[in-house]
Image (tube, rainbow, N blue to C red):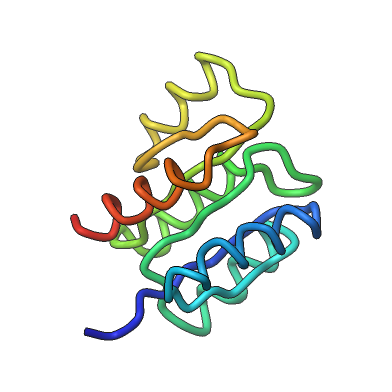
Length: 121
């Protein structure tokens, strides 16, 4: 089976690096983007099985990116991560089609379990 490709989107470099280390350690093909705008350029050029994005970013927010991704390709699975979670933003994310909404700091085991579950759908 081909390696699953994941796009990690976060405006904080250390968060991108941590997620890349966790995910590539499990055998995923990981690409990182520092903004929603950069993520959309990557998505236009190649297929990703899953996008893991921060909610609050400079420029395009995670919710705006989620909407742009699902408008572009309904098959892309999106998981949102946030340190600033609210019930409203969680409801919005799920209503817009997010697979899951995880709070930071996240447990790496829970993150990997969520990613694995998302990619089995």
